[in-house]
Every structure is written in structure tokens, then in C-alpha cells.
Image (cartoon, rainbow, N blue to C red):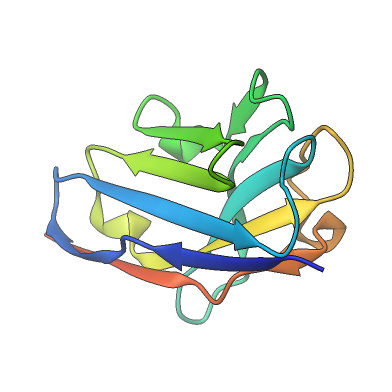
Amino acid sequence: QVQLAESGGGLVQAGGSLRLSCAASGRTIRGYAMAWFRQAPGKEREFVSTISGSGITTHYTDSVKGRFTISRDNAKNMVYLQMNSLQPEDTAAYYCAIKSGLYGSVNVREYDYWGQGTQVTVSS
């Protein structure tokens, strides 16, 4: 079993930046796909980005391409999401997740463990 803990959320003005971190414990994340999802009030949880177990392959939802960057440090058991040019529509709780296998998925059901989330609020 693995535990995930997100941090780094907060309140930022439009155009600003935040860096989210996800700390894993209980087992290594090496070789496992990791992802970030987000959920705004009254909406379903949606895919944001995923990174392969090797860290070579990444994938982003269209709305964040060019603004967000996912990365991982397997030695530290950490995953990151650098978010630049933030917009009010990025406001949501952001969740880190891990799934079996080398490659990620946009499907929330394919992920085995989740963190508790960190709130990101972008003011206009």
C-alpha cells in the first residue's frame, strides 16, 4: 500500500504560479505511472497530467498544455506539478494518484491510490 500527500496549494492571482508536490510513502513509486487530477466544486474529478514510471512520457489535458509541467524524482519518491500562467478556471482541489503499470491514463478509475488533495484558488 502507498500513501500520497499533496502540498503546495494556495491562493494566487491570475497569471501567477504554484508548484504542487506529492510525497509518496509506503513503497517506491519507481516504475509506476503517476498523475494529477483536479476537482472543482460541483464538478467531476478531471484529468490534468500524467507521467510514466520512467519519467520519459508525459501527457496533459489540452487546457493546461504549455502552462503546466509534470515531473518526478524517483529517488525522493516525489511527483511535482509546476503550474504557470494560472487562470481562475484552474481553481480546484488537486489530487495526486498512482496506478499500476508503467504508463498513465486519463481514466480516474484506473488509479489505485489517491492523496487527500490540495486546494488551488486563482483570483481574477
